[in-house]
Length: 373
Image (tube, rainbow, N blue to C red; front, top):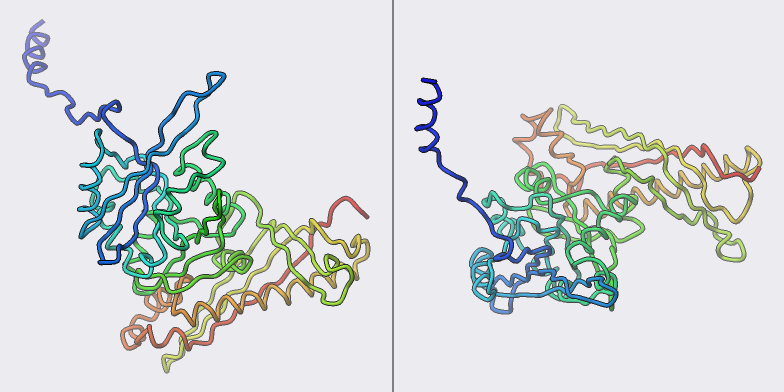
């Protein structure tokens, strides 16, 4: 009894939870975009999905679009709040888009506000849009009219591209440590808006927080293969391995990658000369080959040889482009820094990386070719 009498007064002193967010007083942002105006100000665009009544009791999603500019990302966001009756909340944001011009500047200056806000959706996807991000977010897409907002639609499009190895898996949280790493860069999905839809065209390459170029599909699939990322859905790619067969479709083969074993070696000589090599050993299933039923070991071996040659050539194209753009998403510099730091201290990596001997090779092993024997 004495214990109960002691506890009761203490309970009166306990405080309640006052950090509540009333949903009926909040507009949830599901997509945000950054551009720069002609006078250099930050233009922030936000999409807020609203459900409206439709026939048969089903609701359609209408996206309300709000925009505001300011000297910084935070100032433009505050001005955005003043244009809306309710309070804007980005805790459920699905995607952040950068217009191409904005991406070519320092994107950390725009992301800084997210890293300082404990309510930020750090799992939101990041992507670069051809043209302006505001144009993409404002587009009336056909699909989200039926079931989802523009943020969910764009996020799902990127996830689909990630699972098919068209683009690497990145979000606000995963790019943060890489942006502060002098030995590694990153890449983001590159979107192109069409009339009433959006297409994932490849990846945007970054160096020192700035977009420096792109790798378009289908080479972006090869790029993702070289990263060694694991995917929940097997990677698929179609390659031209013949030149003169008629009709034209007889020159192509489509494969599904079932296993991708990657080795990545960086060598540094006593003189400080750096070289790197990526080797892939892929086990694949042929899902389309109009030329033959692959019923003989000789034909299977021929396809393996031609695929290995073609994919190796594509891989080397990716490496050449990365070095030309001075983008190091594979982390060659990070490896040198970690295992050869005295050498790293003497190097001007920005000048050295484009000139290093960097090779890539892909070896293909066909382990299946369908039910036709």
